[in-house]
Structure formats: structure tokens, C-alpha cells
Image: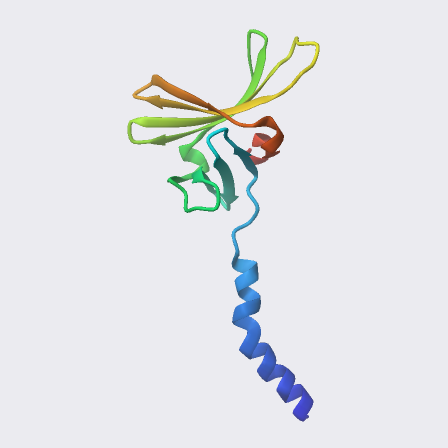
Length: 142
């Protein structure tokens, strides 16, 4: 009886520590690093898609949480020789579009990844991802 009582006490005492590990943030559905040593991560929790961008091993410089209805997801869009998948997040007058694209007529099809940033629908910049750093797929967000 004393052993089972001790086991129960130990379980109750350490349960917050055990549950802390399960509460850690899940691995992103999509992530990539940029040449400027920053990281982009996309997470999905229930009906919420989370965009995080910032320096590696630091709090995000920008974090957007949107429901699936608040983002625009485009899968398999063909334009000229490009085939693209994208997800767009609107934040006030800014739009952040995470894009994966491939030249479907190229001899070697190497996907390109990046973030297109617009302000009031006007192009501001495109931040390329390092292809070798890409993990996951935008297809997993659908």
C-alpha cells in the first residue's frame, strides 16, 4: 500500500513537469531560413494559422494569428511556366505572402521559396528562403 501511495505522490508532484513537455509548441508545418539569418515558421493549431518571422533563437519580430477564413491559401496556381502554392496574411495595410514555386517546364525542377511583402497592394520586397533549410510543405496547411 505504501509503494502505491508513494507512486501516486510522485506522479502528482511531477505531473506539471511532464505536462510542460507536452505543452511545448508543435513543430511548424512549414519553415525556412533566410540569408539574413532569420526564420519563417507557419504553425496550425485547430482553425488558427500562425505566421512567425524573426531572428533565429529569438522571439519573433512579427507574429500573426489568423483563422483559416482570414488567410488566402492558393494551391496549384499555374501562371506561365510557374506552378505555385501560397498563403497570404493581411496585417493592416501590409500583406505577407509565403510562396513556393517551381518552373514546370525546366529540365531540373528546383522549388523556390520566399515571402512577398506588399503595402497597400504595392510590392515592397521579396525575401528568399534558403532552399536547403526548407522543412514541411505549404500543402499541409490546406
